[in-house]
Every structure is written in structure tokens, then in C-alpha cells.
Length: 549
Image (cartoon, rainbow, N blue to C red; front, side, top):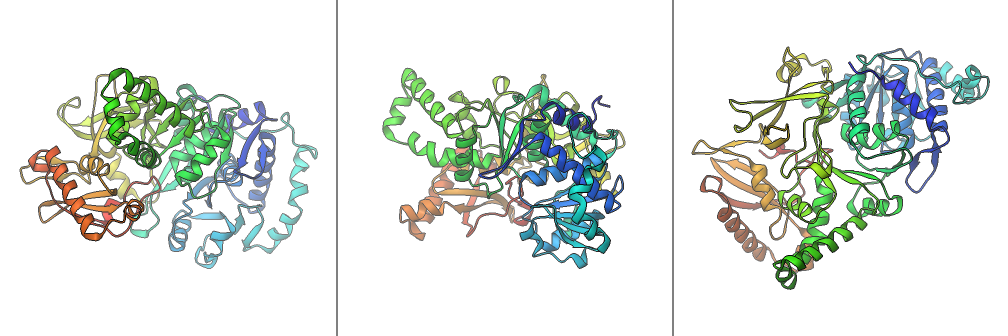
């Protein structure tokens, strides 16, 4: 068990950084740590008026914002359990999660609440606006009247003024439940990952020791903080380190993200591969494909100078001041990874999952090893379910402080992944080396057994295909014993070059031939099929493979 409690980390950071800037909503207001403390105390009093008890569930849905973060901090420091819901879930999914989690309160953006039906969420005592904490719905008329005067009365416990001398959060043991994270919205796929205070503390304290952030540093929160990756490393860890967090609160397109980076100059950047890959494909690869550049890259001295210039330009694109970019959530394209490594770009790749809150492995960029996902973190142990874990590919299994308690109200699903000794089956296939660096080869569910009996990892084929002409994204599936590639083409490039349907088919035929010349015969693609729209994705921007198999 870890020494620090989650609430002591919150309390210590708030008191030590009382006058410093804590949160900003992008292109909007900024608040200090003292203001965060004030709002936490306000919400604690609101919870008491709703008769919320320790262990009760409180759901929240909305885009990243200061008040979203404050609601999270207030809930877990009160001893209640936060249930973050991704804002792109459909109303029926939201209703289901609120009901399945037994949530008694819901904090919602006004826009999302307009599409919800509070009457079908039968456990709710009230719904409050994330925007200003006003009541959107309440089953208690008396509470409505009390809330009107709460802005003045909640300070009665602090002699009318909250100061860092009288601010205090109660101690909550680390074994208590803190969060239930739903990995999907629909009834058939609902898995509420139960994370204890201990899991959150383990992730935060590891990051404080190993990741490059200091008091007063800036960071941009653009990954959804309703998901564990963004929550842990763009919110909780920076907050507990005295940093200034800017919540983007907009649809995080590469254009919007990079504009924010240029204005905020974050010291640490967390990203999913999709953002990095798009920048490489749209801005860098066209330059590298020019004949003159290809010739210059063959000369060692010239190549070194060109790589230095590209590195400098790419660093500027991300705001210039970052110490490191941590990429996670999905596999990074191998070609992109190799190029970033060759130019000396400050990046590393981490590995995690919701069930570990999320961190499993990470290594700083200076010690990062190509094609790995870093070393197993020191709060965890890892083993490979194979005869020889250093050479034979098998399922990655982990155990330690980060691991979840199980799936909420789903003992059958829990039993499938969590054994009696606490080992969690990740569903990922890979190997480890003698230094505990993890190398992931694919997902056990997506692995295809070829006709020759050899294992085929479609991710390996897709990584190559995604870098070929006019390919935006791809998915390799098995159809009648043969490998077929579904390709969503780069429509912007097609329109720009006025490519006809027949010409596109010819291009894809050449792509297929190049693929088959690259890989062994048992991994041959028999056909490339044009897919008419982008593939549906998870919050981590991984393709929902199960929809297309």
C-alpha cells in the first residue's frame, strides 16, 4: 500500500500553490488553486444537502473544462465515487451508464442535458450544470431553495473566509473506490472499470518521479479527461504537481491542438498516435518524397543537417518548449516512429489500459527503445503467458497497485481477466526483454490464424498500408480464409489531384502489389476494398475492429 493518500496529494498541492494559476478554459477564464479549493468546499456542502454519502456514485458528462475537473476533485475528496461519461456517448448510453452505476447525482453540460430524459434515470436526486453548478433538475424542492443561499452559507464553517490555513480535506484510505470508468456505453458491452484511490495514487506518484513536469509548468488538456489516459496525465498528475492546466474544450483536430500549443507552450505533451501520424503524413512525408530531398538524404552530412532542420521545425509546431511528448492509447505507425527516432525528436511511447488507471509501462525519451512501449512501471509486475516470455509471443499479464478492483456488478467479466492471484490479462500479445521493456505485437482478439497455421497480426499490415498512396486509414480482416484490406482513402488528396474512381482502383492495386512484395506469402492481401467512410473509433482513436470483422 502506498504511503500518500489521494486526498493528501490534493490538499498539499492546493495549499502549497494557493496563489498560483491552476485551471484555464482555453480562450476564457483562469482560476487559481485557492479558487479550486473554494469550489470544492462549495460542492461538498451541496453534496451534504443532497444527503450524498461516502461510496455514493456521482456521474459527470461534458467536454474538458475547469468545472469538470473541480467536480471530479470534489467528488473523490468527499468520499463519493466519480463516474466519468464520454461526451460523445449517445443519450441511451448515458441513461444506461447512470442507471447501471447507481449514480445519485449527474453533472452535465447544458447542451448534453437537453437531449437526456431525467425521468428514465431513476436513481437520480438531481442534475446540475457543469457550467455554473446550477440545478437543471431536482426531485427535492427543499434543496432548490437551499442551493439559492448556498453561495453564502457554505463558508459558515470557515468563519466566512476560506484560507490555506483552514482548508482541509478528510483522509480517505487508498483501498476505497474512487472511480468507475465505462469502456463502452451500450448495454451489451458495458464494463465499469473500478479504480481505487490506490490506483490513482500509484499513477500520480510514478509520474511525479519519472515524468518531466515541475511546479508552475503549463500543460494543455486536449485528450478527453473522462478517459483514464487524459485524466491521469493531463489533469491529476499536473494538478498534484502545482501546474497550470489549460482545458481545450473544443473538438481536438490537429489544427486546433497545434494552435493551442503555439499559444500555451506546454512543457509536457500527451498525445494519441493519430495526431502525430497526421502531421507526419500531411506535412513531413510530402517533403521527404521530393526527388531532390531523396538525393540529399543519401549523403550522411547533408542528411544530418536536414534532420536537424526538420526536428527544429517539428519542435516549433508543438510549441517549442516541451520537454517530451508521450504517445499512448494505440500503436504508433512503425515508419513514423523510426523517422522521429532518426531525427532525434523528443518522444516516447507508453502503454496502459483503463483497467490499470492507466499506466503499465513507460520510459523517458532519452532511454526509449525502438518498437517498445517502455519499461514496466515500478508499481507493477509483468509476465508473458508463453513457454519463453523473452522469445515466444504470448498474452501480456500484469499485477500491482495500478490494477483495477474488477468490473462493477459484472463478476463474470471480472473473472475472465483477473485471476485469484491478482494477475490481469491485458488481451495484448507481446514479449519482454531482460530489462523489462515491453514489445507489443497485437491484440489477442484481432490475431488471425493463417491457413499455414502461422499467426498473422493485422496491425503490422495496416501500419505499412497506411503509409501508401492515397490511404487515409485501413483495416485488415479475414474473409473466407483470405486477407482483405478495407481502405478509407484520403479524400482530401483525391479531390486535390482530381483522381477518378478507376484511377483510384489502379492505385490500390499497386498498393496491394507493394504490400505483397513486402510481406511473406502467408500474409498476402488478396484484395483491397474501398470503404466509403471513416472507421468508427474508440475515445483513444483506435478503430472499433469488432464492428467490421
